[in-house]
Length: 494
Image 1 (cartoon, helix red, strand yellow):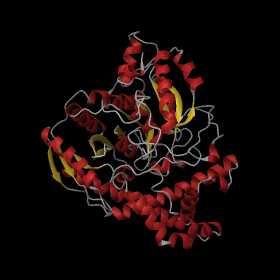
Image 2 (cartoon, rainbow, N blue to C red; image 1 turned 135 degrees about the vertical axis):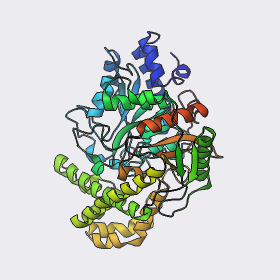
Image 3 (cartoon, one colour; image 1 turned 30 degrees about the horizontal axis):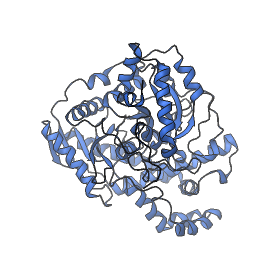
Image 4 (cartoon, one colour; image 1 turned 180 degrees about the horizontal axis):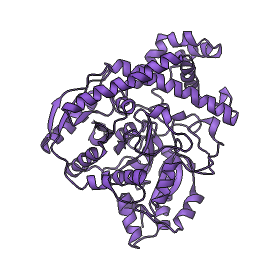
């Protein structure tokens, strides 16, 4: 099998070739390794190769619906027994996992051949993938730009054709954001559907869930079947084979907290809305009655408390010191420690109000449609803390003057500016709703931008049915980026 043939198959297609004896799992693995060797010097997406493990897996025996299909897992929330789970942090590069996380075990039971772990920002705390320990991960469509985060490494490898799908997770948009920036399909399952642990029972207070990014809807559907019910086709795959019922879809392009939304983001949503109308669905402008500014504040509170807990756990379990953690992670953790228990309780309690507001919206509309992101992929380093701001904050952090740090309005403005790039995704995380990003639009510069749909609890099958309908009407899997396994890799980031 040659690379140009390999990249044209999704996971379901590759598994069929292996099952029919047209190609061996080892031959397929060789293609994936060759593709990775070609593009990763540019993309910098692989945090930890696992080639020895992959060769042993491919040698078999293999069974399951993805038997012989190459796959990467994310170096966060997806432990592989005996190997470090780095979480994008210098502090955890030697922290070996005692056992597989359940989702990894289910992927292995499905026959996937895991050949590495993908890069993620430290503790998954950013919407870009630029960890200091590994360096920035780059977007195959333009290596001068980010693939998004925190599943940016996975998205970059899938978009470039190294693997048809890869492990991801989503605590604030980390499946949907890189799917949008990299031209992929990304489904965030609803809360409680995919099992967590055993390393941790619930990440980010239930806001974060495991999933995948993929090039085709049927791959994501079968992956969800595998993650939820075991190694076989099931209800989610079945959903992609039937037309969705005629739906009423409410759409809104306005940022939930009033930040600017680019014309390209609006165009991505409007294109999706028009296609839905062409397919017979009813589409009208509407949005949930939710205080978006408060939601972003409560999301930021949860992330800061999570950051504090991750640093404290790394210090306790592995003897890490402050110097092992990135500056921005330490600032976020300091703000988390400054949050009192009553303040955190009140913030977390408001999540229920957002869920009620979304439920009331879904009493009138089957789905909510928005842009996935507010602008095209930022340039590498664009969202770094400005040097002057970092210089002002470092002394406060070093002296433990957390109250002054929390009150520093210029820091809060910096945080809001970062979130303003991705203001649409956090709603589904805090409410636990399933949501997806579908790649239906490219900017004038050729950068992908997705549209997001949010469903009520249990709406994964509805989302998948609509996604399959959209994919049939406007296929995207054959569009390849500047950097792919069969093209000359770009060497100069733009």
